[in-house]
Image (tube, rainbow, N blue to C red):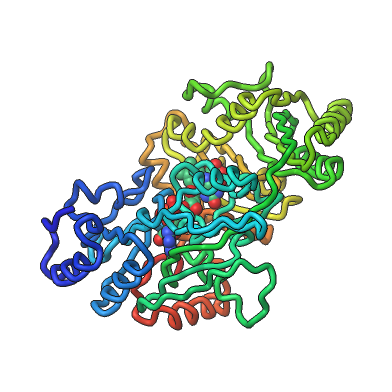
Length: 477
Ligand code: FAD
Ligand code: MLT
Ligand code: ZN
């Protein structure tokens, strides 16, 4: 919280902003700023003139107004868990980071309207907990939920492990409060399921990754808390069988599948080898696994029996090789900790090249075969560990380096491998960013696949909202 290291062109802006937010609202100096300038894998490390931490919407608006007048770029930041470098400023150091971490009020919970109104800096897990206290469910759930913040979830249209049942963040937002790039505040905090009064403006800010404005608060949808939760860890011979089983479980449960996550043996071994809390839930090694979860509305409403019957029939047909049900909440959490540790587990096996892609669910097996062959052709002995949200057709096609290869040499193949995998995704009419966004990482690849007419519409929107180009510049577009 000091003004040391503020370079000359930013001194005036710094002093004006200090008047608005006070000492607690400004962070300067390399050491104090470090945690705002690097993402967790260290792939992107930026510089900033300084970091601003406003305490409320009005302060955000004043800060944005001052930056707008000075023509200084703003990088909005929530929990800084982005996997595509979206929350990290560029290396030039001529932008400010605008952290929403002090906007942490839950403004209202309306249990009868099934809505909660929260500020952008509230941590996702805290929203889940507030909903549970009111006997409600906020269904967005992902590995970073203990540190990512609602504004970041909205700006990236976060997905996670319950999209199959409840949709992604876009489906959970009813209203927004946004500070526009010139500092005006749009109060769109409406908790309505029906509102056909023109363009649905809130949609523009969802998945915009901070390029059109700063989200300061949101009205989010809540659901009834499930009364029956059934969780199983099942082994299958191959992805084709996994896809077939999804249809069977959907039908058998009356569409009550909440999660349907795919895990290959390779990455399960990474996790059990390196992370003490990760244990293989099954007795024998199997090639592929599914973490299946169903939510029902009545205690003992028959979901357990429905899933058991379904898996047993599949077992008899050779579709399921083995399965374990979570008999206690502790066991359920063990299954989920294993699943949520997969990102971390890859770090122990050297360099990893990421692809967060989606294709139609029916095309997942063909995509996996083609992408695996292609990567092994490019880098013999590389180790694809495709895992993730099979129920949404969203696979994290991450590739770990060959054991004997130099880490940097492998990571040097990042763009080439991305391009090859994305070409396959494109042939299946898929998306090269299913849930993590574009940020800095996928800028060129996104431009390669979007049509000129689509890019032109995006540029037109950017120009209309942010003609000075100060909001998270160089990201997305
Ligand atoms: P940040 O990283 O701070 O920012 C992300 C982007 O949003 C940036 O472009 C930033 O400028 C912008 N932004 C942030 N706040 C605002 C605001 N208030 N207004 C405008 N723009 C803003 N993602 C998934 O979708 N599904 C997963 O399953 C998933 N699993 C993950 C697991 C792990 C272990 C990790 C580390 C990440 C995972 N992610 C996942 C990625 C990440 O957690 C999400 O993208 C999350 O939504 C980002 O939230 P954040 O608060 O950390 O945002
Ligand atoms: C997850 O689903 O665990 C993350 O989105 C995956 C990742 O780290 O690629
Ligand atoms: Zn994911």
